[in-house]
Image (cartoon, rainbow, N blue to C red; front, top):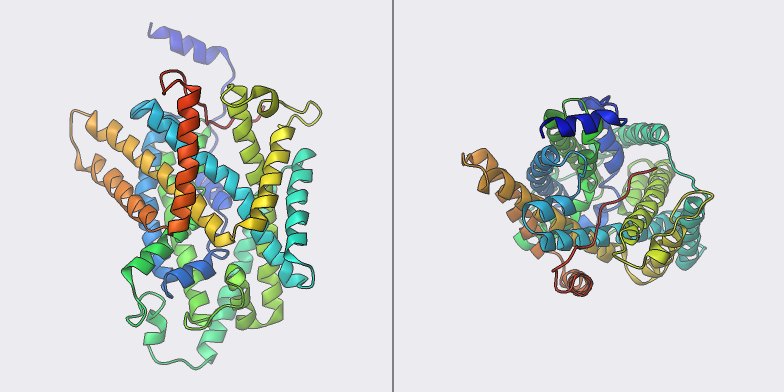
Length: 452
C-alpha cells in the first residue's frame, strides 16, 4: 500500500517548487499591500482615542500567534490551505462549516468595502459628484471588468507594490520635514501616539485593535502556496510570520508619522479618508493628490480581486451543490468565469455601499476573520498538542495565546457589528442544519476552486 500514493503522484503533472522564502514574503506583502493601514487609520485613531500605533502593534502580536498556527496547519494540509479544512478535519466538520461560513462573510464584504473606499477617494478629486454616483460607477466598473475576464497579473501587482513603497518613502520624508519644522510641546509629543495618559482607555484601545486587524488581512494566503514552495515545512511558516512582522513594523511607522502630523485631539474632515488629509497637511496639495491616487489605484485592484474571489467562492459552493447549482455553479463559456456570481456580488456591493458605512463594514469583516483565526488556532492546538504524545509548551502557548487574543478582540467589536455578524452566523448555521439534516450528512464546501 505504501507504493500506491507514490505511483499516483508521479503519474500526473506536479506544480514546480520554485518559490523561495523571499518569493513567499514578497507575495504576502503584495497581497496585504504596503498601504494597508492607511484606509483604516482614521477610524482606528477615533476608536482608540488616539492610540492607533498601539492598536497596530497589539494586532501584530495576535496575528503573529495566528500566523504560527497557519504555518503549522499548512504542513498538515499542503494542498487544501483553508481555515474551513483545518477546523473541519481536526476538530469537527460542523465547526469547520461555521468557520467556512464566517469566511464567506469576509469574501462578500470585501468588495463592498473597496467600493465605499474608492468612492470616498474619488470624492476628494470631484467633490461635486454625489457619493451614490461614485458608488454606482465603481460597483459597475468592478463588475464589467470581471465579466470581461480582465485580471491583474502578478507582475503588475509587484510593480504596484513597488510604486506604493516609493510613495510611502516620499510621505515619510515629507512628514519628517513637517514635524521637525512645526512647534510641539516637548518630548511627550513623540510618545503620545503610543500612550497618552489623558485619553488612554483599555476598552477603547481594544476596540481600536479589533479594527486594526484589517491591516493584516491576507497574510493567510501564503499557506495556499505550499505545493509551489521550496522546503514548505520551513518556509511557509517562516514567511507567514515574517510577513506579519514586516507589515506590523511598516504599518506602525506609517500610523506613527501620521499621528505626529495630525494629533488625535484634532478631528478629521472625513474619518474614512483621514490619511489623505494628513498627507495634505504634511506637504500640501501635491502630496494630498499623490496619496489619494495611490490609495484609489490600490483599492481598485483590491476591489476587482475581491469581487472575483467572492464569485469563485460562491461557484465552489454551487459546484458542490451546496447552494443552487444551476445559478451559482454556472460558468460563462467565452470568458470562463462564474458570470451570475460576479453580477450578484456586484449588486450586493452596490446596495451595501449605499447602506453601510466603511467602519461598520470593516468591523463585520473582522467579525468573520477573527472567528476564522480562532478556528485555526484551535485546530493547531488540537493537532499539535492534544493529539501529540509529547506535550511541548511550544505547541501549547502560541495557539492558546492566538485564540485568546483573537477572542478578546472579537468581544471588543461594536455591539451593532456583533449583532449583524451573529445574525449572519445564525442564518448560516440554520441553512447548514437544513442542508445536512441536522449536520448528519456532507457539509457545504467553502474551498475556492483553483484557476483552470
